[in-house]
Image (cartoon, rainbow, N blue to C red):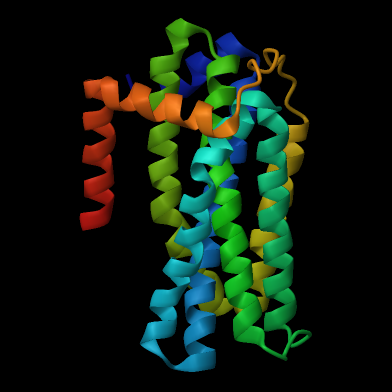
Length: 241
């Protein structure tokens, strides 16, 4: 079955709730992929240092990994939708901050503030994927989940490819300031899209100490060999890539 047919069948059975969630996801992917291209160009313009380009990834990955396990705990115990909205608003704030830097309003220590924005981008991204996955599981009936997951993954990969291409075109033809402003607009649009989503979330999970809950999750993954093997395969594929 083709991708358009899969999308139409899913939308017909779920009253466009999944369409809103998917729109949120693709806007967020495009936003931070475009932002990544613009930031790399911007940092190199300011520093002419290849090490500074490498530090972009480090500035994002440290807060991402430091908060990823806690993000899962928070999403299980509080509102999935509002964490996703807050992540979009945080990325929008980063886009506006970078817009001000590119426009010359924050000239003092501009490189430092760019790295701070990158760090907050990593923090926001730690909450996006688990929020999205949790909401998709709530919205979709079991029989539609596999097909919807395939559609979601396909469009996510399209965004991962199209985002950097769009980022390069925007930086080349419109400049960094407009590019950053567009990323902020995409994130604000994503937040509004998710606010408009009507979903009945299940009651919060029973409260447990955060480190106890995280340890239980890690033990579950370790004892589920299929899940553990799949995650390790994905991890090494990303690292080697």
